[in-house]
Amino acid sequence: MNIDWNARPELLAKVKLQARVETDEEDELVKDYVAAALFHVEQHCDIKLVESAPAADNEVALEPDIWQAVYLLVAHWYANREAVALGTIATSVPHGVERLLWYRKRF
Image (cartoon, rainbow, N blue to C red; front, side, top):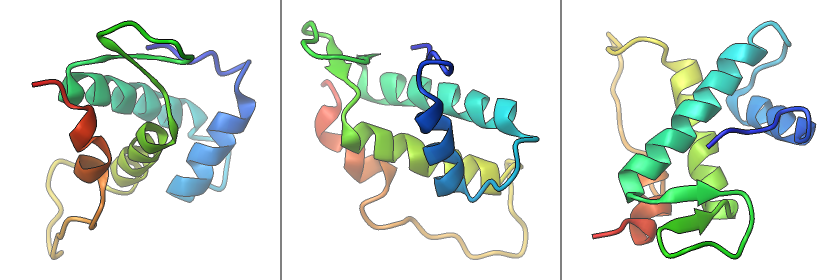
């Protein structure tokens, strides 16, 4: 799914707020993270995301729970830019990405 960033300037501001990005220098990186997160959701749930309802059988409209999962993924990827974090203790966030998407998954 492609986002028309010119038509959705509020979206970039919201994603940057979630990820605590305070400058415009990394906007393209943040946009790439959003694209990757949307693709991740599609692959995880075996669905195609669409911006508006109604959606076909294999499509799901981008609703608040899906956007929240995208925001969490982008913020995580922005904060943790390497595949491995040394010297930290990692835990899952309760009701994180998996929980937000579990009922959307096609079996």
